Amino acid sequence: MDSAITSKGQATIPKAIRDHLCLKPGDRIKFFVHPDGTVVLLPRLPVSTLRGIVKSRRSPVTLDEMTEAAAAGAAAASPRRRR
Image (cartoon, rainbow, N blue to C red; front, side, top):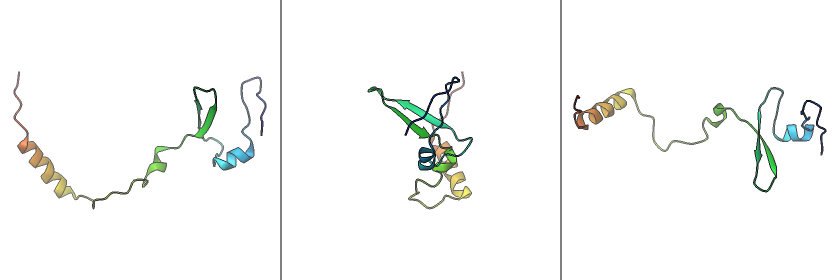
């Protein structure tokens, strides 16, 4: 597959590549240039796509448990001196 560069420096990404990368109008892409001169084009994914990718090994913590842990940490910390 190939594409021509316009006078404005733009190129059309062939449909097969757009379909493979699931690119839609308005999507952003990133270009990476490797030391050997090869260039890789990847879709720039929003952070929201990472949601749920890592599964927690623990059960969720309640607000009361967080408050107790914060209080215990504050009590265990050494007092700060004022200057």
